[in-house]
Length: 218
Image 1 (cartoon, one colour):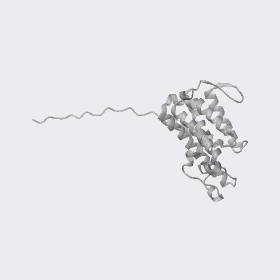
Image 2 (cartoon, one colour; image 1 turned 180 degrees about the vertical axis):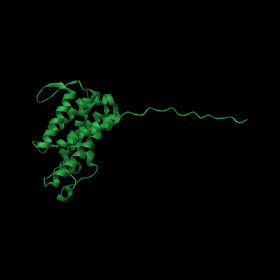
Image 3 (cartoon, one colour; image 1 turned 120 degrees about the vertical axis):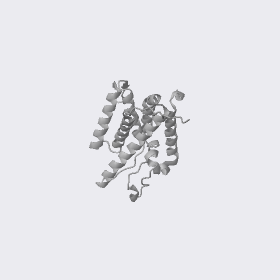
Image 4 (tube, one colour; image 1 turned 90 degrees about the vertical axis):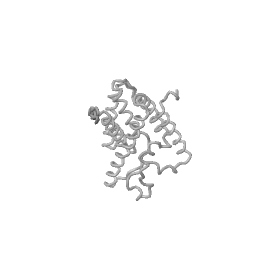
């Protein structure tokens, strides 16, 4: 069964599991790979570094293995089918654009909250990329029936995407679930959607090259 998972999804799954084991072994030694808010170095934290735009997505909370489990379940459930359609290069590009887009949105929100005196926190987890894949799945398979885990209600993939986006926006604006980067989730969906629009943009028709008329001189 594992060998049937397409390559990029399989490598992402392995990488996340390996890094999680390293987190359990090394503890806080990997904290500099989390996504730290801009300016957080002034408060004794590792601070922001450019590589964190990607590395944070391979880390998960060591004290909450369900965080990793749900993300990896969604990666296989949605990502594998998206990769089968888009193939390796396009799928990998889309995933990491969603990851980086989620990070940029989170950095912007964290900067705004810190400017208002609200303490910001580092972010980790593949959820930004996963939400991007969820949106891609809804675009590619809008009428496919999927089952929610909690509660177990079947619905169309398109409906699931809209529902999740609405819930994330509501929770992000109201702050009912602190400690969860809701705007990073939305950022993954937003940048994924923008990339899909870019790929689907109308392209001008190709004009055939002009023939050169050569005259022979005798």
